[in-house]
Amino acid sequence: MNIDFNWNLIIPLVILQLILMTFALINCYKEEETKGPKMMWVFIIVFINIIGPILYFVCGRKSD
Image (cartoon, rainbow, N blue to C red; front, side, top):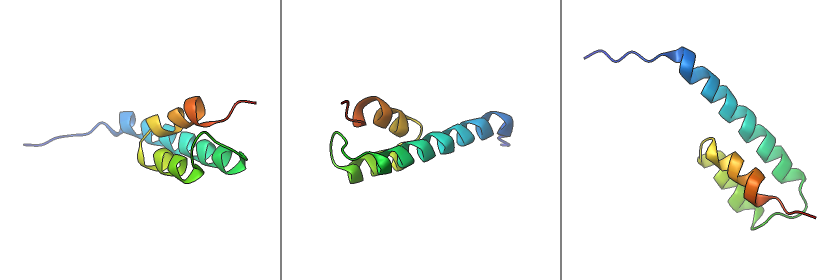
């Protein structure tokens, strides 16, 4: 059984994940307050692929 991955589809998703994760971590670091502990958001951003950074931007940042 030979399973061939199409890397042309996977590489853009990996790049998107890294970009989202980087921006979310930088934003989390710069924010003075977040909804919930910052360390919790760091773990969510890093360990929940693609969805974690999106959750942070939608739910984690405090609105003024």
